[in-house]
Structures are given as structure tokens and as C-alpha cells.
Amino acid sequence: MYGKGLKPLSIATVAMLALSLSLVFFYAPLDGDQGFIQKIFYLHVPLAIVALVGFIAGGVFAVLHLRSDDRKWDAYSYVSIHISVIFGVAVLITGAIWAKASWGHWWVWDEPTLVSFLIVFLLYATYYPFRYAIEDRDRQARYASVFAVTAGAFVPLNFMAVRMAQSLVHPRTFATAEGGMPGEMMLTFLCSLAAMALLWTTLVKFELTAKSASGQVKRLRRALDAPVAGGGSRIAPEVS
Amino acid sequence: MTPSRAAFAAILAKDLRSELRTLQSLPAMALFSVTTFVIFRFGLDRTSLSGSLAAGVLWATLLFAAVLGINRLFVAEREEGGFDAIRLAPIDRSVLFTAKVAALLVYLLALELVAVPIFAIFFLEDAAGLGPLILVLVLTDLGLAATGTLISSMAVNSRARDLLVPLVLLPLAVPLMIAATGATEPLLSLGGPSYDRFGTWLMVLGLYDLIFGLVGYAVFDFLLED
Amino acid sequence: MELLFAAPALPLDEAGKYVAGAYVVFVVLLVVYVAIMAAKVQRIERELREVAAIAERNKEIQAAPGREAEEAAPYG
Image (cartoon, rainbow over all chains, first blue to last red; front, side, top):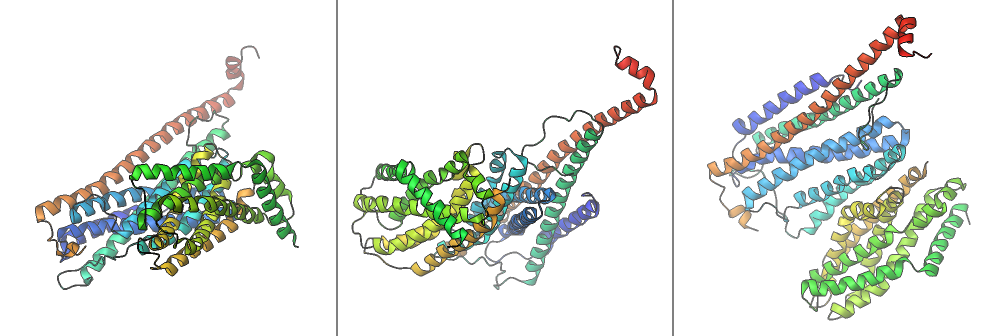
């Protein structure tokens, strides 16, 4: 039962989002260097962290799938990656807005974290055509898991390599005029992080529940010997 | 010799013999590289390269040439039942992975034996940086071989297999390219080779090779299930 | 890139637009996702209706097999 607990989870997500938004705009102090622009950071960075953890989770689920051969893990892996890719779009767009506001350009190659994230995003964007290209569903699930594991191993290595490619490191400090990250900012950041993590989990659960419902309808159709509706995704794993 | 070792040697020998006899991939990769160098000469409007430009042109060309070879790596296995043979043999199936990685490594090194001297002749002022470059080439080729074999083995069983390898392999190859060009750039600088962060970049390459070699070895068995 | 730290922060009204833009993007993506999921749920509802109708028909056929069967298979 995938829907179990979805309601309390979504309520917690809404509450946490409301709390963190309030903290961002009414509680967190203004940054000494960047001023009001810095507020984007409370949106951009938690989204990025949650997306990356989501990609790694996709890899972990993929390992479980390969070891147990239980298709449900493939569904978990696919949905984790799917939601993380969507978060990734938000990360890149908010990152570009932040870059434009901070340095006047929509994209800067000087930011190693943003560049690393772009590369990771480009890799996971190939997950969909990759799945699509493999017709046999069993094989598709297995190969997709191999992809997710490889990509998961890639994430930390990529961040390290890109960071090393920068000869000048830009310390991204969140600071008021005094320097260092004050407690209020840290609290706001942590709340935003928790809110995004909850949002990711809610969306993943939501997606799995919808897939499960579809799967149950198919099951009903089969039980009633009713014609199975055509269509349905070639790549999204079925959940039953 | 253990059965796995024997199988490794057999598969590797078969691949190399087949390539020598038919000469399908290697000449194409070499020709492609040289022509690409010419395209870069005109595209960049330069007759000599050094530093980061030299490193970039060299590695971009080698990478794209490698993709050509990687695309063809498992075609014979697919068409002639090599996958089935491995499934039936009473040995550790991952030996197919290691043998193919070794074969691809040999192809890439052979390619570089031709392409790098020609690159030097076309663009470099002096060849002093080429000696230490060998180390960078070997380590990067290992990484390309590991990841390339993994992706190629999946792509061969799909539609649009020629698209899949470049699509998925290129992002995966980015850290390799970062480290390879990072190490190569000071080697090819105008004033003579320098070894700025050379050891660090070699370590990054080695780490990549280790991680993806292990990942590939571990998951290969699952790829052969049917 | 010392300019990074020397550059003055944008005036509040300009900065506000960028910050608002970022949060708007976030909300829009979220709502687009909800819309896509809404379409999925609608499809599930439609299919359930169809399946319910089929189930009811099957029940009728079972309850009055003679009459229904005759109507359904006139040559049988």
C-alpha cells in the first residue's frame, strides 16, 4: 500500500515549507555581501542537496533491485531519479537566476558546484532515452539499475574532479557583515533543507501511489477478462 | 591456469586476432583522429597549439575517436552468440568484462600510437612533454575502457545502439577529461613541460579507474542474465 | 574574481525581482507537476468507471444466464 501515510506526510511538508519560507523572509538576517539576493540560496541549495541525495537513493534502490530481482525496487529507483531530475531543473534555473543577480551572467563556469551539478543532471537526463531504447521490460529494468548504480558512483567523483579543476576557490560563505554563518541563517537553512527533503519524499510517494493505482486497475481488468487499455508508458516501471 | 584466466586470455586473443584480421575499428579511429585534427586547425584558425588549447584538442579528438571503437566493441558477441557462450561456460561471467576492457585498452593505446605523434607533428613546437604524457594516456584509457565496456555491453542490446554510447558515455567521461586535460595542459605549455599538480591529476585518474573498474566488474554478471 | 566580494549588493527593488523570480520558478514547477499528476488521476478514474461497468455487466450475465446468454449469443 503505497498511499499509506501520504496524507500526514504531505501535511508535514506543507507545514515545513510554510515555516521555512517564513523564516527566510522574516527571520534570517540579511547577508553582508550579497544582500537580498542571498535569499535565493535558501531555495537553490536545499533543492540541490535533496536532488543529489535522491540520485544516490536511486542507485541504492537499484542495487536492491539487482540483488532481489523484485521489480518494486526498480519502480522506487525510477521514481527517485525522476523526481530528482525535476528538482534538478529547478536547481539549474534558480542557480542561473542567482548567477545573473550576483555576477550579471546567466551562467558562470567559475562555480564548481553548479557546474558539477549540470554534468550530473546531463547524465541523469540520459536515463530516459536509455530506458526507452531497451524494449524487453525485464532487461530494461536490469540495465536501468546498472545505469543508476554507475551514475550513483559517478556523483561524488564528479564533484571532486570539477572542484579540483578550479584553481581559484570561491569560498561561498553565508555571512552578515561580521563574517561566518550566524545561527539564524543556519536554522533557516536547515528548515529549508528539511522542507525540501519532505517535499521530495512526498512527491516520490505520490508518484508511486498513482502508479500503484494504475497497476491495480490493470489487475482488475485482467481478473475480469476485460480488454487491457492500450498505451501506458514504455519506460515507467509498473507497480502492482 | 585457472579457467577464468584461460577464458580471459582466450577472449582477449580472439578479439585482437579478429581486429587484426578484419581491421574494422582501428584504421577508422586513426583516420577519424587525423581528419579531426585538420578540422581543428581550420576551426580554430591556428597552426600551432600549446597549453590548454593543445590539451583540449587532443583529448576531445581522442574521446570522440574512442566512442567510434566503443560502439563496435560487442557487436561480434551479439551477432555470433558470444553472450550465450559466456552464459553457458562454467566460469565467472565477469571475465568477459575484464577481457573486453583489456581489448579496448589495447585498441585505445594503438590508436594513440598513431594519433599522438601526428598531433605532435601537426601542432606542437617540441615533443618534450610527450614522455610523461604516456602515463596520462594509459590511465585515462583505462577509465575510458572500463566505462566504455560497461555502456557498450548494454547499448548493444538496444535499439539506437549507435546513439546510446555517445549519449551516456560522454557525461560519465567528464571527470576523466577534466583530469586528463588538467595533467596534459602544463605538459604541453610553451616554455616546456611543467608538472603542476601532475601527481594529483594522476591520482584522480587512478581513482576513477578503480571505482568504475570495480563497479563494472560487480554489475556485469547482472547484465548477462536473460 | 575579487570583484565577487567588492561588488555592492543590488538595490532592494532589483534584488527583490530576482529572488521573487526564483521562488516563482519553484512554485510553477511544483504546480506543473501537480497538473500532470491530476491528468494521471483523471485517467485512473475513467478506467475505474469502465472496469466497474464491465464488472456490473458480468454480474448481470451471471444472475440471469439464460436470457442474457440468448441475447448475447443468438446462434449459440
